[in-house]
Amino acid sequence: DADVTQTPRNRITKTGKRIMLECSQTKGHDRMYWYRQDPGLGLRLIYYSFDVKDINKGEISDGYSVSRQAQAKFSLSLESAIPNQTALYFCATSDTRQGGLYTEAFFGQGTRLTVV
Amino acid sequence: AQRVTQPEKLLSVFKGAPVELKCNYSYSGSPELFWYVQYSRQRLQLLLRHISRESIKGFTADLNKGETSFHLKKPFAQEEDSAMYYCALLGEAGNMLTFGGGTRLMVKP
Image 1 (cartoon, rainbow over the protein chains, first blue to last red):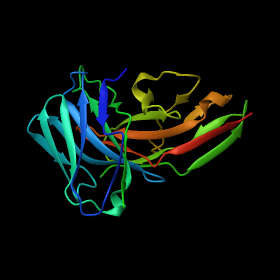
Image 2: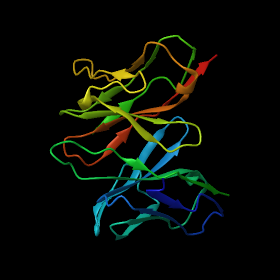
Image 3: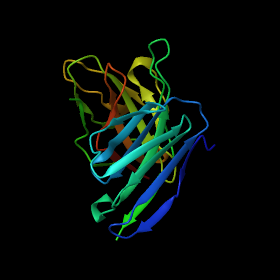
């Protein structure tokens, strides 16, 4: 299934270029997240959003910005890409706690970004 | 601050051997703990959560608040268990889902 879709799947860009990664979801979830995955470091949270117009920094937000254009869309931008932003980027969604139980996070297939 | 540590980057076992993937966390309140799995060329997906106290694909995990651990165990590993495993923590505020560095499990025939 493709409940959480990321575009592009792969991208090579040059240092200093601006690039946008897009994420859309059909699950109707209100929460969306951007993570980057690096070998040995696991997934680190870049930004998250609980609703349209709600934006929160994660642990590694420097050099990134996001936009929550609609409940279903959450874009990640690298304003001026640098080589150490080369990584696998994941978008995820989840729902607000219901009955006290957190609903699981659903992940996109990832975007492999290479900055040369 | 909340933190999740998975001390082993790689764990290699033979088929049929017991498996234990370690996870330790740092959090001052009452967290919710999860194990996520990423099979080759597949999306990251939830394996199990401590609240449910369930066994999924033969895996179990017990939250030990005294030792702040949430180790993942399986008595007899199968080749199809080979994957990347991530331990994750959700704080009481229910906002940030924090992941550990991941452990790659390789089950050899």
